[in-house]
Length: 527
Image (cartoon, rainbow, N blue to C red; front, side):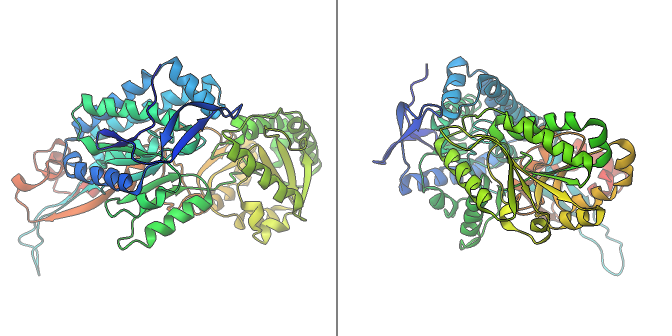
């Protein structure tokens, strides 16, 4: 059993200078868990950011192989966290042990995936344009570009993924892979979990000889502003509410030196069900969709919060089946008491909205979240009603029935940016409705056919992002290998002798030899 100190992690050491002590709670009972956690002072936040800044020039100049070794060591340490650790996470989050064990594997898997990216070397994005001394009217100089780490990154832990989107989660993994030291702000809902994982990261750092400030962690409410505004911090990674993401983005934009915020915030992930699919397998779709809506108590970023269909007898039958299934779904414990308060508040707003009708679900009461289904008039989408598009974090979804194809198109145009959109249909009608793909590409980061969005594969091609308000920057992703791009920036070298160039740009680099022999730029070679 690990003894929790509750101290902040700064520059390879521990610090507890603050007088405010915080308590971690059992998500099911509300009882205090053993141990207290010390809220970071402003001086400690400064020390953590400064430690990351001191580590930055050392860490970013380590070879890709050494950074890969570090990431693999973190993965090994996380995999070694045993039953006591799993039990701690379960108590803090009310998530079942199987979910935590799976998430632990995903977390270590992300680290190993980025280690492979580092060893591959293409993350440098090298581009080479060789000198053309005889070009007229002017010669061209030798120009070579690659990408370097932005600098220290502030990462905020997510409530709904205590491992995969938290201490050593995707933002931390991609920032460390890029060469950026991290200052992690632990989520108040699972501080004990954060300490277990932070210890694992520190053990890996010490074992592989990383600079002391490569990873730092602070506790406490209200410390995020000090962190984001600290001049050493050069980027922010965040997964959470729209309000929280917008607040951090505003802080970062109004600094003397503005910095990027990569925030994943709010998405209702529309599911569009086509008529022939309902006719042939409506009952099965109703069962599968209800399982997706209630999976993990609806606390997934990709929870399907909006269901859209064309009005028909089949759609009416589907609604009846879907509502009946949802009405019988059991209540579930949410991640923490704050999540339940937020869920209850969101349901209250939906019940009070004149354009919404409650279709199914037992009255919300007690200490658990009850699944709910509402039906909205299509005019709310057509007119851009904000409440309809605001994510209700929990096992609730809204159904919209459109009159015809023209109204469906208009309704989809009314959607704000999303992480995902799903189309459920039969092969022949998917061809007929192929225009959906063109339209949805402008709205979302990932389009699914005949699947359900609750499940995000960690791989090369995955995009877990989308236009605002799904994310603050639609050009990136917080899941998959492309996530490393957020924490890199390009640098160009002009007329540099080979010996002075970074290794990634030197003529002898295996990745450059063929393109130099062929006399083409890196960009052309990759194309």
